[in-house]
Image (cartoon, rainbow over all chains, first blue to last red; front, side):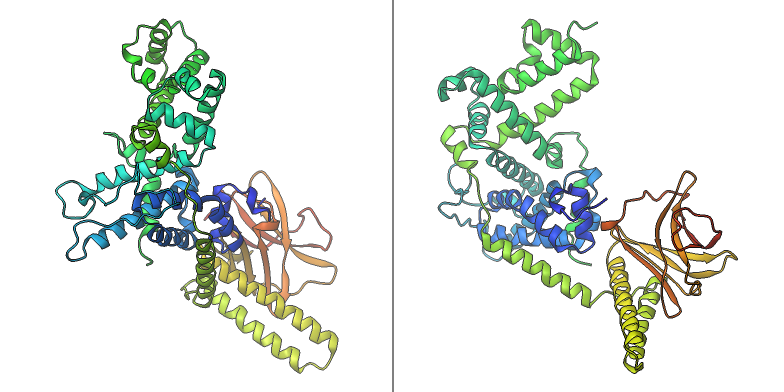
Length: 233
Length: 269
């Protein structure tokens, strides 16, 4: 039975209520997933204002196309991310076609995670713009996965974020991390395990993780989201 | 035969995932536990799949992070959306919802015909309410108008989302209305019933080969009988190929079906 307490609904229940025109359910979905989608798009585009427009577009698409969501193909977050990715790439292409421009300038904003600073990029690579000699969709996919994975790490509690950064950016062993942070080795291991479990949960159904590997089929959810992301018919 | 059991292999994989360098070195490692794990993997597709999932995540994490700690820490600083975005998005959706209600497209289905009929009935019942000079009858007419307004609203909700419409048929097999449903609402509309005696009701049932469940009863507004239900306050039912919706004439307090079908619809058709 579907209850009025929509906060306890799983993705399928939430999408069903949104498809039926339930604005309260939509607000819950927004509060549940907007942070992750926004963080990913900001990291991808490097522009908070543009990211806000893409996120708005993605959530309005959710409102209009929630009936197309199929929980068997993946999570609602993955679906929203796929829509946002299409919108963001469309935006880059549109800007890249402007006369006299060979790169998309990135506007960085202090205090917002500084996507243009260390670890980010200050100009969108020209390969992302149609007409380049490198396959722009491959470059875009790599950039997108990077943005989403970084956002997944950013959503972890700080002490879990630290062990992932030290372990996966610097290849430190668990013992070295324990020494560096002056934590017991057991604490380092348990925090790393929790972090990896959370990342697997949030990122595991991301189809682009497979797309970056040779011979892997494209996720059906990505195809559904691509369908949802098409302009209103 | 592998010397490492499934649980030990799973634990070893989880350990390797803690350190990407050891994970990458698994194939070449001479450590006894790694050798035993490799033997187990050669016989266990489940553990091979677990390991591959972990490797995929590990590769994605490694590729996503810059090499220096300071750069990596900066790259994964949390980014919060502006609060104004929430207001904007919810406002945009609210406006969209209102315009959608105002422009629900007319569809060439039996249901849209019913929507039009129900809307006409609302007007007709309202008009009757104005001309009747008796407070009780006026209240009853207004109640019917309100009920039909709710029917119209439910019809619009059904039409606006993915839905299915199936004809209702009399025992003789003639069309007598329709039953339609979306994920959220059920609407039954028919002109094939006449108002029952005061101690009787037309009861609605869902049934298949295994069970029969009472789901409601038909109400009347003029010559139209209807039943509207939201899934919010009604247990879900898996619609299978043999599921029937049946209307029978029963005693007002009946909880078990005894009457013969007056109307029925094959929901799995």
